[in-house]
Length: 331
Image (tube, rainbow, N blue to C red; front, side, top):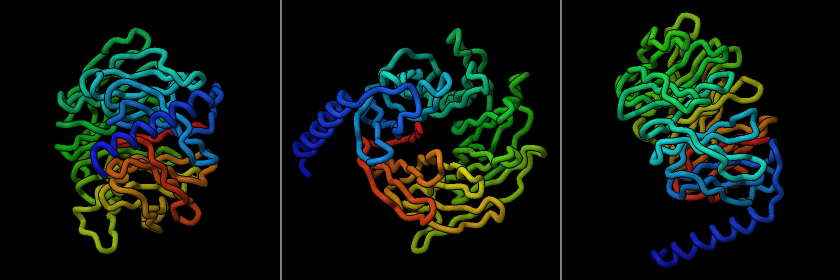
C-alpha cells in the first residue's frame, strides 16, 4: 500500500467511526462495548460486543495505554504516557470530563479498592508513584527496581505489587507505610499480574523468560514457574505480557506477544491446555462478563482478535487503530 493510499484508508476509517459514534446512543454503564486504547492515534476505539463491529472512536490525550474502570464503573481512566496524566472518560457521553496527573511517562497503574488512590509505575525514575486522586497530588514516590512496569493492588488493598523489568523482581509494597517489605526474584523481564480467585496466588508474566512465575501472597515466595512452548518457534519469540483470569477461575489466559498466540493455562495443574492463534504481538487480554469470549489486543497488526474460550478458536479480527495497547470490556 502506498503512503497516499494508507492515509486515505486511515481517514476513511476515522470518518466512518466518527459517524457511527455520533449515531450511537449513550448509556451510563454496561454499554456492551469493548474499549481499546490506540497508542499512535491518541484515541480509544469502541467495538460493539454483539456485532463485533467498530462503532466509534473517542479522542483522548497523547499515547493512551493502560485503562481501567473508574468511579463505580461509570468512567474510564486512561493513562497517557506522552501527556503525563490520566484522561477521565465519561461512559454515558463518551467524552473526556477531566484529567489527573500521573507523573512522567505513566504506562500501568492500579487503584486502591476505594478508588481514591492511584499507584503508577514511573519507568524512567525507578519509582512507584502514589497519587491522591481527590487532591490530584503526588503523595510519595517509592524507590523500586529499574524500569518498573506492572502494578497490582491486592484485593484487600493492603499491598501493592510492582514488577521491575531490569531487576527481574517483584517488589511488595505495604500501602499503610508506603515502604517495600519484600523483593521476590522472578523470571526475566517481568511485566503484568493477575491474582487467582482467592487471592492466594499472584501470577506474573516474564516477557524474556517465555514463562509465568506463580507467587504465594501469604508466604511471598515463588511456588512455580510455567514455561511456554509454541511449535516451530524459538523461546526468544515467546514473549508473555498480558494475562487475565477466566470467569470460572479455572484458566489463566496469557498473551504470548511475538508468538502470536494466547496460552490457556489450567490454574490447578499449571499446565497449558490450549493455544489460540491471534494477531501480531498479542499483549492486552480481557474477558467478557459471562466468560465466553476473550479479547486480545495485537500491537503490531493494529487489530483485536476475539476468541471463543470454549473452543480456543478465533471468531473475528477487528481493526482498532494503530498500536492497540489495552482492552476494557464494559458489559
